[in-house]
Image (cartoon, rainbow, N blue to C red; front, side, top):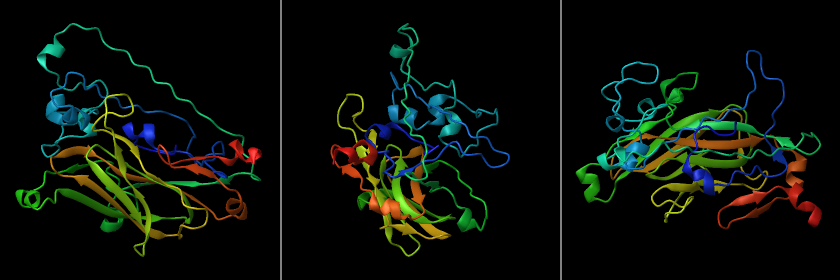
Length: 302
């Protein structure tokens, strides 16, 4: 799939793959692998919760669990995260809500998947890279990725608070095995996130992805929640990464309070440079958020 780990920001985040680039599926999988589609939904009910953020961040004391989904005991140093809010666990609610006798609420999700038949004469395939700020393999001298997926942001010290410097910055380096033109990039952050950036080996900025926080009560604009992330759509051929280039991921969170189970991912699409990719325009918009319309939907009108 294109992404691993997405949240409430999907409502206002552009996910178009600009024409003529495309994600190719249906090719024979490597030996020992199968190609499959799946959706893994992680939904948290915060109705009646005395601390909605603690529920959303899977604080272990709010879920009253001491073992993880596999039945292994959770370590004392693990305050919150995915190990404490697995399937069928429930976050703490206040007495009035817990005892009101309402029947369970059923929710249904609907997804629309669009695709085109592949044509080598029209489409340029992209490679998907999922970069994780918790991956310390290069720092540790480990040849294999070591992604922890999530991490904890501790509350800032009184000294930093006095200096108005309650920002937690986490960085790591990851290598891109096969380079090319950067086609698309976006970060994934949790509530409390301040922004993320991706840099080349020489320090150049490849993409800066900033959160959009909701300001209301309606669906898709919930106050205090990240409802969108800014994206990067470089002009074809203008932003490149080299084979084996080491990229730096920077993930920033507010440390005004502790945050548990946060993520700092960067998703990028990289394609081999091809002449046809430079000659086919893409129609892009910046309002109400950045998104692009594939040329096959509009080029016939020009």
